[in-house]
Length: 224
Image (tube, rainbow, N blue to C red):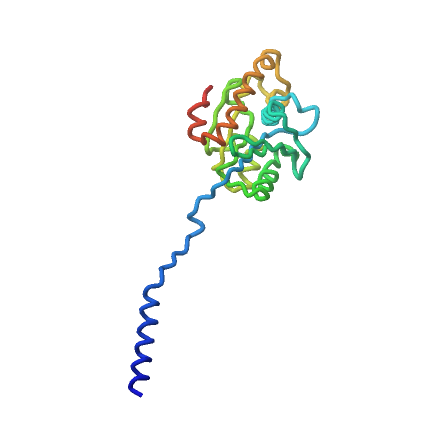
């Protein structure tokens, strides 16, 4: 009897010691983990239709079209837009041209962000800017919509202003009351002559965003 009681206490003590030796388990707080992704969503803003192809307001389309042609890739018609996939240095760039018209651009951005699981920090939106002289580049990590309907839609849909925007200057050389005609007008002869070089720079900005990071890209290209 005494031996049995001794054995029982010995066994219980051994189990308690083993419990004390179990490694601690730490649960990670998912909300505190930064998403790591090699995918980037590059959104060129514009309006669909042949009548808009060469207009100032469609510079976003023009820039992603230029990169696609340069790299020999094609756009495919997809839900809420046209999409081309470009791979460079281990990164995948999804070039998106929303077909929702400018004031509903946010729908396409949100859809493809969710579908491809692309984090907010890996999104770049390319748009025209009246407040910058022709061809001037300004890249920012956040900011207001500046009165631009495409940016207004994206801001309202994503419920944030903290996404990268690449503004391409189209200048404001229009007469009073002629802003809409100017923005939806075609490039003049001088602008058309200068555009190829500006588009080349713009394509390098897209690649730099994914490979060198936003801060380095802003340092290298802003004001260029």
